[in-house]
Image 1: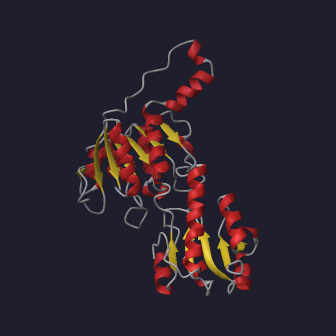
Image 2 (image 1 turned 120 degrees about the vertical axis):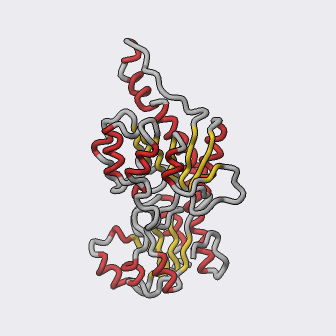
Image 3 (image 1 turned 180 degrees about the horizontal axis):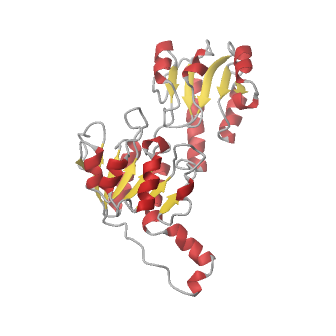
Length: 313
Protein backbone atom coordinates (compact mmCIF):
# COMPACT_ATOMS: atom_id res chain seq x y z
CA UNK A 1 0.00 0.00 0.00
CA UNK A 2 3.02 2.27 0.19
CA UNK A 3 2.27 3.61 -3.29
CA UNK A 4 -1.27 4.74 -2.41
CA UNK A 5 -1.39 8.51 -1.92
CA UNK A 6 -2.96 9.72 1.34
CA UNK A 7 -3.38 13.42 2.06
CA UNK A 8 -3.36 14.75 5.63
CA UNK A 9 -5.08 18.13 5.70
CA UNK A 10 -3.34 19.55 8.80
CA UNK A 11 -1.13 18.49 11.73
CA UNK A 12 -3.06 16.12 13.99
CA UNK A 13 -1.41 13.47 16.13
CA UNK A 14 2.19 12.34 15.72
CA UNK A 15 1.38 8.64 16.11
CA UNK A 16 -1.24 8.85 13.35
CA UNK A 17 1.16 10.70 11.09
CA UNK A 18 3.92 8.14 11.69
CA UNK A 19 1.63 5.18 11.04
CA UNK A 20 0.26 6.71 7.84
CA UNK A 21 3.78 7.47 6.64
CA UNK A 22 4.85 3.89 7.32
CA UNK A 23 1.99 2.38 5.35
CA UNK A 24 1.12 4.83 2.57
CA UNK A 25 2.58 7.53 0.35
CA UNK A 26 1.80 10.37 2.72
CA UNK A 27 1.28 13.96 1.60
CA UNK A 28 1.03 16.79 4.15
CA UNK A 29 -1.02 19.64 2.81
CA UNK A 30 0.20 22.20 5.37
CA UNK A 31 3.80 21.84 4.22
CA UNK A 32 3.06 23.36 0.82
CA UNK A 33 2.88 27.13 0.43
CA UNK A 34 0.60 26.94 -2.59
CA UNK A 35 -2.33 24.59 -2.07
CA UNK A 36 -3.46 25.12 -5.67
CA UNK A 37 -0.09 24.21 -7.16
CA UNK A 38 0.30 21.20 -4.87
CA UNK A 39 -3.10 19.79 -5.75
CA UNK A 40 -2.59 20.39 -9.44
CA UNK A 41 0.71 18.53 -9.37
CA UNK A 42 -0.49 15.61 -7.23
CA UNK A 43 -4.19 15.35 -8.10
CA UNK A 44 -3.87 11.91 -9.69
CA UNK A 45 -1.72 10.45 -6.89
CA UNK A 46 -4.08 11.02 -3.95
CA UNK A 47 -6.75 8.42 -3.26
CA UNK A 48 -7.52 9.17 0.38
CA UNK A 49 -7.92 12.19 2.65
CA UNK A 50 -7.38 12.14 6.41
CA UNK A 51 -8.93 15.20 8.07
CA UNK A 52 -10.19 16.25 11.48
CA UNK A 53 -12.43 18.80 13.19
CA UNK A 54 -10.23 21.68 11.98
CA UNK A 55 -9.78 20.85 8.30
CA UNK A 56 -11.73 18.08 6.65
CA UNK A 57 -12.76 17.70 3.03
CA UNK A 58 -14.85 20.47 1.50
CA UNK A 59 -16.29 20.45 -2.03
CA UNK A 60 -13.33 22.38 -3.43
CA UNK A 61 -10.78 19.87 -2.13
CA UNK A 62 -12.87 16.89 -3.21
CA UNK A 63 -13.29 18.26 -6.74
CA UNK A 64 -9.55 18.90 -6.98
CA UNK A 65 -8.78 15.19 -6.48
CA UNK A 66 -10.30 13.11 -9.32
CA UNK A 67 -8.84 9.82 -7.99
CA UNK A 68 -10.20 10.30 -4.45
CA UNK A 69 -11.87 7.16 -3.07
CA UNK A 70 -12.21 7.68 0.68
CA UNK A 71 -12.23 10.36 3.38
CA UNK A 72 -11.28 9.10 6.85
CA UNK A 73 -11.72 11.70 9.57
CA UNK A 74 -9.76 11.62 12.82
CA UNK A 75 -12.92 12.57 14.73
CA UNK A 76 -16.48 11.49 15.33
CA UNK A 77 -17.83 14.81 14.00
CA UNK A 78 -18.50 15.13 10.28
CA UNK A 79 -19.25 18.83 9.95
CA UNK A 80 -15.97 19.56 8.13
CA UNK A 81 -16.76 17.05 5.36
CA UNK A 82 -19.05 17.80 2.43
CA UNK A 83 -21.07 14.61 2.73
CA UNK A 84 -23.35 15.56 -0.13
CA UNK A 85 -20.41 15.91 -2.49
CA UNK A 86 -18.99 12.59 -1.30
CA UNK A 87 -22.30 10.85 -1.98
CA UNK A 88 -22.50 12.37 -5.44
CA UNK A 89 -19.04 11.14 -6.35
CA UNK A 90 -19.27 7.74 -4.66
CA UNK A 91 -16.53 8.56 -2.15
CA UNK A 92 -16.53 6.52 1.05
CA UNK A 93 -16.43 8.30 4.42
CA UNK A 94 -15.43 6.97 7.84
CA UNK A 95 -15.13 8.48 11.30
CA UNK A 96 -14.00 7.34 14.76
CA UNK A 97 -17.09 6.79 16.92
CA UNK A 98 -17.28 4.84 20.19
CA UNK A 99 -13.55 4.96 20.99
CA UNK A 100 -13.81 8.56 22.22
CA UNK A 101 -17.20 8.33 23.92
CA UNK A 102 -15.90 7.71 27.44
CA UNK A 103 -13.33 10.50 27.39
CA UNK A 104 -15.78 13.12 26.16
CA UNK A 105 -18.43 12.01 28.65
CA UNK A 106 -15.86 12.07 31.47
CA UNK A 107 -14.87 15.59 30.51
CA UNK A 108 -18.50 16.76 30.47
CA UNK A 109 -18.85 15.65 34.09
CA UNK A 110 -15.54 17.32 34.87
CA UNK A 111 -16.82 20.59 33.43
CA UNK A 112 -20.01 20.36 35.48
CA UNK A 113 -18.02 19.82 38.66
CA UNK A 114 -15.55 22.51 37.64
CA UNK A 115 -18.31 25.10 37.29
CA UNK A 116 -20.50 24.13 40.25
CA UNK A 117 -17.67 23.50 42.73
CA UNK A 118 -15.48 26.29 41.31
CA UNK A 119 -12.52 23.92 41.15
CA UNK A 120 -10.26 26.16 39.06
CA UNK A 121 -10.67 29.07 41.47
CA UNK A 122 -10.11 26.75 44.44
CA UNK A 123 -6.81 25.63 42.93
CA UNK A 124 -5.76 29.24 42.43
CA UNK A 125 -6.83 30.10 45.97
CA UNK A 126 -4.41 27.57 47.44
CA UNK A 127 -1.55 28.44 45.07
CA UNK A 128 -1.88 32.17 45.79
CA UNK A 129 -1.68 31.68 49.55
CA UNK A 130 -5.13 33.20 50.15
CA UNK A 131 -6.27 30.11 52.06
CA UNK A 132 -3.99 31.15 54.92
CA UNK A 133 -6.13 34.25 55.41
CA UNK A 134 -9.64 32.90 54.93
CA UNK A 135 -11.67 29.88 53.86
CA UNK A 136 -12.87 29.67 50.29
CA UNK A 137 -16.44 30.72 49.56
CA UNK A 138 -19.23 28.13 49.47
CA UNK A 139 -20.00 26.53 46.11
CA UNK A 140 -22.91 24.54 44.65
CA UNK A 141 -23.72 20.84 44.93
CA UNK A 142 -23.86 18.63 41.83
CA UNK A 143 -25.46 15.49 43.24
CA UNK A 144 -29.21 15.44 42.79
CA UNK A 145 -29.37 18.20 40.19
CA UNK A 146 -31.59 17.89 37.12
CA UNK A 147 -29.54 17.39 33.95
CA UNK A 148 -30.88 17.98 30.46
CA UNK A 149 -29.00 16.48 27.54
CA UNK A 150 -29.29 17.84 24.03
CA UNK A 151 -28.55 14.85 21.80
CA UNK A 152 -28.91 11.40 23.34
CA UNK A 153 -26.48 9.62 21.03
CA UNK A 154 -23.46 7.61 22.15
CA UNK A 155 -21.84 10.50 23.99
CA UNK A 156 -25.08 11.94 25.35
CA UNK A 157 -26.11 8.56 26.72
CA UNK A 158 -22.69 8.09 28.35
CA UNK A 159 -23.02 11.50 30.03
CA UNK A 160 -26.50 10.57 31.26
CA UNK A 161 -25.18 7.32 32.76
CA UNK A 162 -22.47 9.19 34.63
CA UNK A 163 -24.85 11.88 35.87
CA UNK A 164 -27.23 9.19 37.13
CA UNK A 165 -24.42 7.95 39.36
CA UNK A 166 -24.54 11.37 41.04
CA UNK A 167 -28.24 10.91 41.72
CA UNK A 168 -29.25 13.33 39.01
CA UNK A 169 -32.57 13.21 37.19
CA UNK A 170 -32.11 13.03 33.40
CA UNK A 171 -34.15 14.48 30.58
CA UNK A 172 -33.27 14.95 26.93
CA UNK A 173 -34.13 16.29 23.52
CA UNK A 174 -33.09 14.55 20.29
CA UNK A 175 -34.40 14.48 16.74
CA UNK A 176 -36.73 11.70 17.87
CA UNK A 177 -37.69 10.00 21.11
CA UNK A 178 -35.51 7.03 22.00
CA UNK A 179 -37.76 3.96 22.31
CA UNK A 180 -35.54 2.15 24.83
CA UNK A 181 -34.86 5.12 27.10
CA UNK A 182 -36.52 5.74 30.44
CA UNK A 183 -35.37 9.36 30.53
CA UNK A 184 -37.97 12.09 30.18
CA UNK A 185 -38.19 13.32 26.58
CA UNK A 186 -38.92 16.89 25.53
CA UNK A 187 -39.91 17.59 21.95
CA UNK A 188 -38.03 20.91 21.86
CA UNK A 189 -34.90 22.32 23.44
CA UNK A 190 -36.67 25.29 25.07
CA UNK A 191 -38.85 23.03 27.20
CA UNK A 192 -35.79 20.94 28.02
CA UNK A 193 -33.94 24.04 29.21
CA UNK A 194 -36.91 25.16 31.31
CA UNK A 195 -36.95 21.84 33.13
CA UNK A 196 -33.28 21.31 33.98
CA UNK A 197 -30.60 23.01 36.05
CA UNK A 198 -27.70 21.85 33.89
CA UNK A 199 -27.99 21.69 30.09
CA UNK A 200 -25.36 19.64 28.25
CA UNK A 201 -24.90 20.07 24.50
CA UNK A 202 -23.90 16.72 22.98
CA UNK A 203 -25.56 16.64 19.56
CA UNK A 204 -24.04 16.61 16.09
CA UNK A 205 -23.50 19.91 14.32
CA UNK A 206 -25.85 20.27 11.35
CA UNK A 207 -27.63 23.15 9.65
CA UNK A 208 -30.54 22.53 12.02
CA UNK A 209 -28.43 22.55 15.19
CA UNK A 210 -26.25 25.57 14.40
CA UNK A 211 -26.95 28.18 17.10
CA UNK A 212 -29.58 25.88 18.59
CA UNK A 213 -28.56 27.41 21.93
CA UNK A 214 -29.87 30.94 21.40
CA UNK A 215 -31.25 33.70 23.61
CA UNK A 216 -34.58 31.96 24.13
CA UNK A 217 -32.94 28.73 25.25
CA UNK A 218 -30.47 30.50 27.52
CA UNK A 219 -33.23 32.56 29.13
CA UNK A 220 -35.23 29.35 29.64
CA UNK A 221 -32.24 27.84 31.46
CA UNK A 222 -32.11 30.95 33.59
CA UNK A 223 -29.84 32.76 36.08
CA UNK A 224 -29.24 29.63 38.17
CA UNK A 225 -28.72 27.35 35.20
CA UNK A 226 -25.43 26.04 33.83
CA UNK A 227 -24.62 25.38 30.19
CA UNK A 228 -22.04 22.72 29.26
CA UNK A 229 -20.86 22.42 25.66
CA UNK A 230 -18.74 19.45 24.56
CA UNK A 231 -20.33 19.36 21.09
CA UNK A 232 -19.25 22.06 18.65
CA UNK A 233 -18.77 25.78 19.19
CA UNK A 234 -21.33 26.67 16.54
CA UNK A 235 -24.09 24.98 18.53
CA UNK A 236 -24.10 28.08 20.73
CA UNK A 237 -24.78 31.68 19.77
CA UNK A 238 -21.58 32.86 21.42
CA UNK A 239 -22.48 36.55 21.49
CA UNK A 240 -25.69 35.75 23.30
CA UNK A 241 -23.88 33.43 25.70
CA UNK A 242 -21.40 36.16 26.58
CA UNK A 243 -24.19 38.71 27.11
CA UNK A 244 -26.19 36.32 29.29
CA UNK A 245 -23.20 35.55 31.51
CA UNK A 246 -22.19 39.20 31.86
CA UNK A 247 -25.77 40.25 32.63
CA UNK A 248 -26.40 37.41 35.09
CA UNK A 249 -29.12 35.82 32.96
CA UNK A 250 -27.17 32.54 33.03
CA UNK A 251 -25.57 31.07 36.12
CA UNK A 252 -22.44 29.59 34.57
CA UNK A 253 -20.89 27.71 31.67
CA UNK A 254 -18.33 25.00 31.00
CA UNK A 255 -16.97 25.06 27.45
CA UNK A 256 -14.62 22.78 25.56
CA UNK A 257 -15.51 24.18 22.12
CA UNK A 258 -15.88 27.62 20.55
CA UNK A 259 -17.14 29.19 17.36
CA UNK A 260 -13.76 30.53 16.20
CA UNK A 261 -11.18 28.12 17.58
CA UNK A 262 -8.54 28.57 18.83
CA UNK A 263 -10.04 31.91 19.90
CA UNK A 264 -12.30 32.07 22.95
CA UNK A 265 -14.39 35.19 23.63
CA UNK A 266 -12.20 37.63 25.54
CA UNK A 267 -15.08 38.69 27.80
CA UNK A 268 -15.24 35.17 29.24
CA UNK A 269 -11.62 35.07 30.35
CA UNK A 270 -12.19 37.04 33.54
CA UNK A 271 -15.42 35.38 34.64
CA UNK A 272 -15.26 33.17 37.71
CA UNK A 273 -18.40 31.21 36.83
CA UNK A 274 -16.97 29.90 33.55
CA UNK A 275 -14.57 27.00 32.95
CA UNK A 276 -12.76 27.09 29.60
CA UNK A 277 -10.94 24.16 28.02
CA UNK A 278 -9.01 24.10 24.69
CA UNK A 279 -11.13 21.47 22.85
CA UNK A 280 -9.57 18.48 24.59
CA UNK A 281 -12.65 16.26 24.95
CA UNK A 282 -11.04 13.19 23.40
CA UNK A 283 -7.42 14.18 23.94
CA UNK A 284 -6.03 11.37 26.01
CA UNK A 285 -3.14 9.18 24.90
CA UNK A 286 -5.28 6.05 25.04
CA UNK A 287 -8.15 7.44 22.99
CA UNK A 288 -5.97 9.27 20.48
CA UNK A 289 -4.10 6.03 19.79
CA UNK A 290 -7.38 4.14 19.38
CA UNK A 291 -8.73 6.81 17.03
CA UNK A 292 -5.55 6.72 14.95
CA UNK A 293 -5.68 2.92 14.77
CA UNK A 294 -9.28 3.13 13.58
CA UNK A 295 -8.39 5.61 10.84
CA UNK A 296 -5.61 3.29 9.66
CA UNK A 297 -7.83 0.20 9.86
CA UNK A 298 -10.55 1.84 7.76
CA UNK A 299 -8.05 2.89 5.10
CA UNK A 300 -6.48 -0.56 4.95
CA UNK A 301 -9.89 -2.23 4.79
CA UNK A 302 -10.94 0.01 1.92
CA UNK A 303 -7.84 -0.58 -0.17
CA UNK A 304 -7.98 -4.32 0.59
CA UNK A 305 -11.60 -4.36 -0.66
CA UNK A 306 -12.87 -5.37 2.79
CA UNK A 307 -15.85 -3.92 4.72
CA UNK A 308 -15.16 -0.62 6.43
CA UNK A 309 -15.09 -0.74 10.22
CA UNK A 310 -17.01 2.50 10.83
CA UNK A 311 -18.63 3.57 7.57
CA UNK A 312 -20.60 6.81 7.29
CA UNK A 313 -21.03 6.58 3.52
